[in-house]
Length: 171
Length: 363
Image (cartoon, rainbow over all chains, first blue to last red; front, side, top):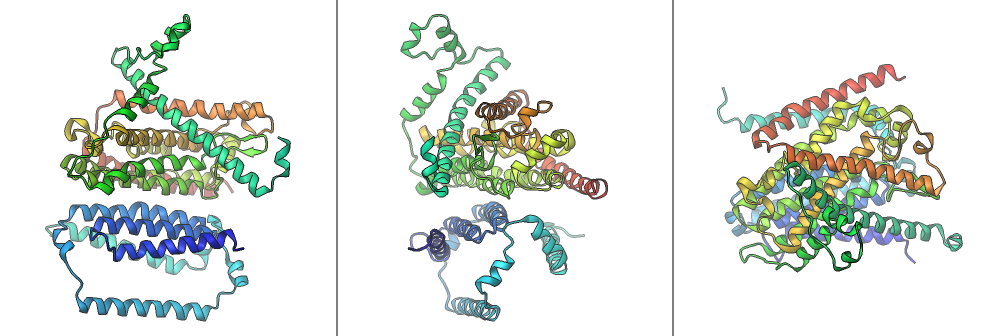
C-alpha cells in the first residue's frame, strides 16, 4: 500500500502540472484573467508540495508573496489593459521555436544539476530545515550572505528603475 | 471517554481535529450572525434609534417577562435575516461573466474561515490543545491566507462586468495590498521580542513578560488601523463606498451570494479581532491571576480560558462596530497616503528600534 504522503505528492504534482498547462494553453478560454487565476492555483499547489517537504516557511512565503501579492498585481494590470487585441493573437512559429528552445535548455540545466548532485535520501535528510526560521536565517546570513545581498540590490535596482519609468517628465 | 485509549494516535488526531473544526466553524458562524445584530443595535443606539425589536417566534408568547425582553433585544433577528437571504430571488444579470460571478463569493468566504485555524482560542481542554493547527509559522500562514482574500473581491468586480463593481474591486486590490505591507511589518517587532513565529509561544511570552500592547503600542496602532483597511470597514470601506459606487464590488449580487460577501466581511473581522487578542492582548491569559495564565488540565479552567479569549475578542468586535458608526470615510488619496507614507516608515523605524533594544539590552 502506498504511503499517504506519496498519494499527496502525486496528487499535488499532478495538480501543479495540470494547472500549469491550463495557465499557458487553456482549450476552453483564451481569457488572460483565467490564465492568471490558474497560475495562482499552480503556485498554491506548489506550496502544498513544499509542505510535504516540511518546508513550512517556504510554503507560507510562497503563498504570501506570489499568490497573495505578485499575482494580485498581475490581475490588477491585466484588468486595466485593453485585452481585445491580445485575445485574438495567434502563436507565431518563430516565437514558438525560441520558446521551445528555452524550455529544452532549462530542462537540460535542471537535469544535469540534479544528476551531478545525486540527491540521496540520507543527504537530503541531513539538510532538512524543517521550516525553522532561526536555522534558515542563520544559513542565509552566514553561508550565503553575499548572494542574498546581491539579490536585494538587484530588486532595489528594479524598483528604482520602475519609479524612473513611471515619471513622465524627467528633469 | 474510555474508548479513546483503544484508538491509534492518528485516529485520535483526526477525530479531535474534526471536532475542533466543527466547533470553531459553528462558533464563528453564530458569532457572524450575532455580530450583525450587534452592529444594527449599536448603530441604532449611536443614532438615537431603537434598532431591531420586533422579530418574535410564536413560542415567545408563552414566556412571561423574559420573552418580550429577548424580543426587544432582537435576539431572534439573525434567524429572520438568514431566512430572508435564503428565500430571496437569486438574480444573475445576463451580462456577467458567469464562472467568476459564481465563484467570487466562495473565494471571499473560504480564506476568512481558514485564518482561524492557527489561532489558539484556549489553553487545553483535558489534554487536547485548543488550537486546530499548531504551526511553527502560524502567523505567516495567517498572512498568506488573508492575502488570498483579495481575490474574491477582485473577481467579483471583474465577474460583474459593470462599472461600479469594477471600480470597487480595483480600489480594494490596491488598498489591501498596500495595507498588507504595513500590517506585515507592524508585527515583526513582536517576533523579535518573543523569538518565535508560533502563536502559542507568543501567548506564553506575554503571560510571563506582560502584554505586547504595552510593549509595542506603535505596532498595535498600525496593526489595528491596517485591520480596518484589510476588512474593508469604515473609515476605509472605499471598495464598497455606497455614496459613490452604489454598493461597490457587490452591487450586482443578490440573495445568498450577497450574504456570502457579508459573511466574509464579518468572518474577517472576527479573524482579525482574534489575531489582535493573540498578538497584543495576551490571548487566553489574564494578568495577576496565576490560574488563568498557565495551562491547566482541569476542564473548568480550560473552559474559563476559552471564555476569556472570547470576551476579549468581543471587545475588539465592538470596537470595530463602534468606529464604523463614529467616523466618516477617508478619501482614496488620503488612504493611500497614510498607508504608504506614514505607516510603512513608522513600522520600519519600529522594527529597527526594537531590534536595537533586543540586541543591546536583552542579552
